[in-house]
Image (cartoon, rainbow, N blue to C red; front, side, top):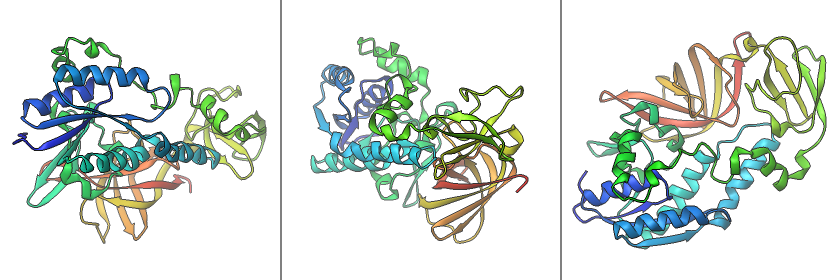
Length: 354
């Protein structure tokens, strides 16, 4: 990675990863500026931390207020839960905000590149840029990036693509700001303390309404007070004791019904996904791929069949709890590396028993 005085804007969040990314860019001789995105009223502490990093590094610091733009992420989040689906706001945000609005801002201010602290890699082969898994697979974040526009790949830098988290912390320790001691956030940025139910009920109070909990035969097992409290594959917090493990197998938003069943009813062989985003030339014929169906998925081998705006996937082995609203990401082996070919939104899943 060499800068040759190219101008890069790094998205600085106030955390370890983005700070390490900024340090690496400066070490590589880029003309580096930092930008902090304000997405909610709770951004003040993080903004202060980000500004401290920029001042320590001696780089220009911009603040970009995206609260109005971020409303589309909040609306998407609420609409998906209201529809009985499980949203993936980080994926949505990466496409529209970080690699959309933020990149627009960077370009207007003369940037050649946009950099973030994501653990993923951009690799150029011949005249083509591709998105690849990180070198340290345990930290890989390519799944969350798989919906960004292919066009932007040539202008994106992921300095941490070849680094581990411990290496990033060590790099940041040189700033003497105690940032390297920060715990890794597991929360969605706009959900305080991971309490998404409270956020949903505040934004959409109509979600709180009583409905039935049934089993797959239609037997009533109890009641719930909002389908937004459930997701496919959920086992804990069901409020019903059945003597053996049961999971959420279906959420019927139209009739306000949650269905529970044993694990076997969540074993799936096929899925259908829609609105594919290709990060390489689109395949016209079926192809083999490792498919991840959620962020922390290790992936499972499958045959992927594109049909225009629809993608059908058949797995080699049974897969647990395919969830509508989540992203299916398709990885192929390319030059000995795991490359993101495309991604698409999961619409339906077919159980092993049909």
